[in-house]
Length: 305
Image (cartoon, rainbow, N blue to C red):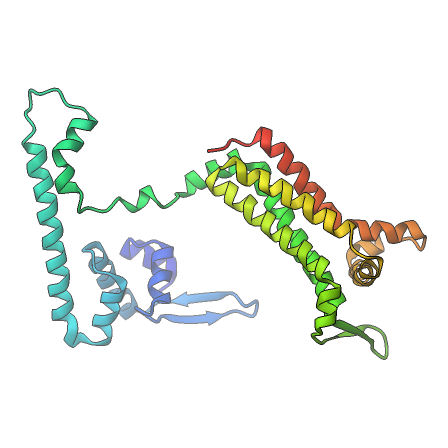
């Protein structure tokens, strides 16, 4: 039986079924095609297990409790009694709240405050609903729409940090060995002297990563100070790169050139002139400049909390 048929029969979602499989509650047959795509086939027994799981989940049993009963049926009584006691306690607490609500006179003017005052003691033992803390897809979509420039800022900073780290790491610790017939091989070896020499490059990487963290935190929290920190850290990383010693810049340029040489851009645009070498060195500043500009624009365009 295929997934769509199982979903129609059990009333479960695709995500729920895959969650139960990942948690080891059932093990349907999984086949991989020549393209590497997995397909799941369910037996009648698998479907019956899913129906049992669905019923228990609707009754409030946890995944761990269900797995425990599957692995050791002798503990089912213990799990049942534990779940029953928890439900009894929950019902008693809600019953107390219901009694407090029923005790409010029908002819008395009420408000949010008077209702809360009447049930405060009874409701204090209850937890805040998860949906109050967990962000829904709609809320996430709205949030990203309000802070679009900061989202692109984060993407540019993430790409910039990855590219800069790759170049700095190879420049500091890699030795290039040309292979017979073309191509090359990198041999890595850690040396404290190289780390000290290229410390400026690694500091720039850390500054860009810190800026990316601030940008991401701003997307979620909406504090203007995080947006300002993103801009300051981005500019600081660019200044550190500009102030690197000439020897360090030369070592990094070697791998910047190799990256460009083996990219699709080499076949589109290339020149042997000196200005082209300067252009290649400038490329690492592109994501930083884009992030700085977007961050500055976001200070005026994005909607804070």
